[in-house]
Image 1 (cartoon, rainbow, N blue to C red):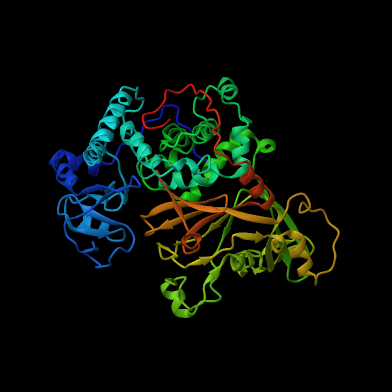
Image 2: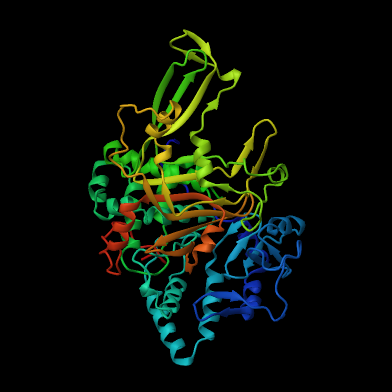
Length: 541
């Protein structure tokens, strides 16, 4: 873990956007304004005069993934070719997401924010409204614009636009959404953070832990001179999200706390969602201690000497399980191109196959010989993993990124993974694995399996789309048996077929009993938000 900085300097915002505005000012924004259109659901998109469907100028693929319009030459690129467009055309770094009307930096390969662009979008939305409605919204925006702002950086989001979107969404009766379902603003390449936060915010043990004030923020700050605490600011987000406010929330203070906790990752560049997940739990664990940690499991590792059969066992705590993709059902062609789709007749990897692979005995290589206590020398051995104790929340990480130190290359695995909504982990527990190893004989040894149920229900899926060095994270949440897509500030209902076909990167399960209990407790009654010593951030709560 990185050492904390006593004096922390905020990373600089996107230089490509600053260069664009220096050269072109607001002319590109104003020219684009006539193409903006707000739909009844409150979503603003770009509607071009051309009746033809927009398509990527490089691959000519019509509406395959997200499309972006260059603010300089008005050419359209898909998410796979925006970087190529920026490299081939000097100074063509800034584009606009056609579907969501949000700024995108082709060189940084992620969303960027600009207050001036937000004003152009809001102004166009107001112009499209009926007379009386327009007047009322303008008055409301003028009243709210006088609120104090604390941050003076790219994360200082315009309060007017956030509140305006809330007003638009209220027309769709979003009050029927479950409590706690609230969008998170992208603060500049922070979709990795938002995706993990959405999963943690709706994990029943974490929700109960922080909303019951098990972590006392006031007491914590009195005990420590360090004003930055990941656990404290996690509690702030829980209070804000479950306050009943539907406006997209900006977790800026949490981001700064995490930057100080993980200074080596402090930048506006895209980070790995799984690495962020581990880092956040490490920050919470640092303050809470082992005895109060809300979610932990235990892995068992058995090393068996192939000469004498002696077995040595070690136990390691875990917060998640990383799984390799199982390729046994793929043809050699599939393994080569790694492009199997869920609707093809070829074999596909399944989560159960990945778990089988994780707990399968593995023969260690000749360069990995281990010392056998019985033989009193190094011997070849078999290694087998199993789960000694299940956590309340089971976090499964799918290894989609491969790194070769020999070839000095990295690549992303795009195979589709089939995963169940209900999961029985009994076959992967240590008692089951050990019994199977010795012919299903009954062994009497200590086990934690009786304390925690092995039946789990899915409640969150974090997906990654795009290439290895760029892409976008989205979270799908399952609340009251309805799936919701959390795409930064945007929350939409989706069908379960969309979730099953997604390219999952992390899958979150919770004990079946806790899942149904959480759904019973989930209501539309807002939790009272605690007052926080920090000044409210514009666009937050």
